[in-house]
Image (cartoon, rainbow, N blue to C red; front, side, top):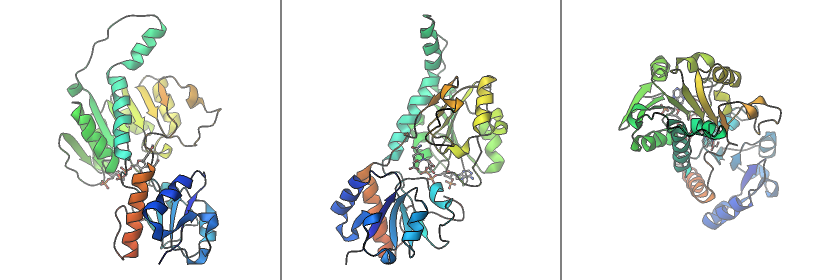
Length: 311
Ligand code: NAP
Ligand code: GLV
């Protein structure tokens, strides 16, 4: 029997998603949330950053299927009922994109592209001393679906890799640190800090002055997780004081970044518009469809969020 599944995004542009769902999973009858015939019968919704209208329109939700990896935008919602399950995307093509994003930016700094760009602007032709990849230390905050992939990818280029997570990990060629107690020793040995943590009560503001001062002088910070991980003024101060050599931000606290925000013009900072890893439609639809089918069959779907831990 076909069930109705609303697809809810505030941004629109969801027609291609709906078409793809109906090609692979016609029994789910995925529709734009405003076209649902029987809202009171809806138990499962497919969402990205839903607002209050989702919860007022569909009072009997049992599970939300997130069209991305990070679920902070759902968990922070004041109207989210306590008993609703949340299922997120796991990789679905994002790990490969994160590998590219971090490899590109780590190499930008490791290979002195920031300095060479500056030299070019001064018509200066001078070779700078290089560092072997094995002596360039890259640390990943968060060793989950995306962070562990980036760690292994950068390891394949020969970088000296380390990572930090909540539970203990074993990843070939990556020195793993665990828990709040080991954060300090992790940070002290990192030249390029890459953030791929989920945004939770325990990770909010983790990129603050105290922690970033533990990085060696001249380190760089790359955040492609959430803007809420970074205290932006602290980053600006440490860049201006020369403690940090550079930074890359794919996410900021207010998105889109307001026109009058000084980050647009901050020296040493590269900004990208939350594009490090997108949810490709085909693999995302297939994963969400499989998860809905698993729940319909009374099974636990992959990517089920543990609400009490926040990710
Ligand atoms: P994930 O699989 O849930 O991995 C999260 C990692 O963070 C895990 O290793 C986890 O430790 C660790 N962690 C969580 N809380 C921690 C804490 N308090 N202390 C230490 N480690 C902690 O998540 P993912 O799929 O890799 O995604 C990570 C984040 O990337 C998402 O939440 C999202 O915000 C962001 N993202 C951004 C973009 C973009 O385009 N910019 C795209 C996709 C995702 P354990 O392994 O021990 O659980
Ligand atoms: C994007 O930011 C995601 O969380 O998938």
